Each structure stands twice: as structure tokens, then as C-alpha cells.
Image (cartoon, rainbow, N blue to C red; front, side, top):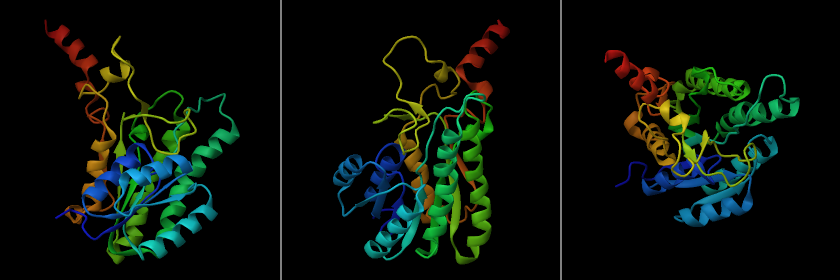
Length: 272
């Protein structure tokens, strides 16, 4: 018996990365799944790989007409939703001083407006007891060069979870956030053109130590499957008393930075 047996789920940005890993996990746990993505070929490939009656719908969450079409398709295919994973997002560098208005608008259009209207337009589909999971990020917790717009967009996601929950909890609908840290995701398109959340590129072949790794207490990048495990938990009845909360999946990077390898090495030297 699966943890999501009989549940109906929608995953935006489900054709690769964290979204695809979560779709696989949902199917394994017994859910019927609809996934979205902007790139038709990649979406159809994911749909075939998932099998189990999974449906793919091509569309951009930043386009409200696409969202209307998506909601109509979900209503026709599933009749309602027990799980919504608002995962689709965009990550791109936005250096202060050189970021264009178009780059700013694109990130905000997908990560903030797109996520907001994904949830709003799905309200009529959400069944009592449904779980809404928003894909956030640890980026708002740290000041990083070139990441101001992306971090601000993900701070909005965390705020949405609290405010959506306050409105929807009387209907028995829970809203929570999963916030990945450095996750290794292979990109099928150049950075800034991939509609699935990807926080770092796949690590390069063995060679000099990647400075990112030195900042992660676990000493490695995370995987999309590890984020998917957290989403499954939030989507399942096991988390039914968790509302408006955030699960951080970052190998300890944001919560215990002094436990990272670089600081452990310095601390060891200071004790000698």
C-alpha cells in the first residue's frame, strides 16, 4: 500500500529535476499525476517514462492563459486535487548594476506571479484535506552575490505559505514549503532557460575541490530524489498537523554553516 494511494496530484515544472523526481515518487506511492513543462519534447519523454496514466500538459506558469488551460485539463482528467506541488521556477544570475528589466520581470513572473496564480486558479480543484507544497529555496537566508532577485522571489514563496495557510486551513487544506539548498540537477538548456528549479549545475568530474562543497556540512550536493522524499512527506497524511511550515533540504548549509568542512578544518587547526 502506497502512502499516496488514491490521491490526485498536480506538479508544475514536472518534466525534469526536482519536479520529475517528485513525480516518480508520487507514482511509486500510488498517486495519479499530471505534470507540466514548457518544453513539449522533454515533457512527453517524462510522461512516457512515468507511465501509470500520467498526463503531461505543455504550458508556462507565467502565462495565465496556460494556467487556465491546465486547470481545465486537470478538472477533466482528475476531477479534483488532493496534492498540488507548485514547483516550476526560474533561477538566473541578476548582478546589481547589470540586470535588465526583462531579466527581473522574467524571474518575478515565473517564481512569484506564476506560483501565486497556480495556487489561486487551483482553488476550485483542491479537495478538503488537500496538501499544497510550494518549492522555495534557502537563498533568502544568505546574502549571495548576483542572487538578489532570485532570493527575493523565493522569500515571497515562504511568505505565501503562511498567508495561504491562514486562509485555507478552515477548509482543511495545508500549505507548506520545501526549501532546497545546493541540489545537483542536469540542465537540458542553458541557465536561465530551464523551467524546472535547479539550484546548482551537476558537479564537474573529479578535480580540484569545488568551493560549494566546502560550504556544505554534509560534504556533497543533494539530489532531486532527496527533495522529493520531503515533498512526499508533506503531501501525505503523515504531515497532517504541519501547516505553514518549511522543510529545509540543504545538507545543513543554512542552519549550521560553521559545521561546513572549511570551518571544521580551521577549528581543528586552532585547537592544535
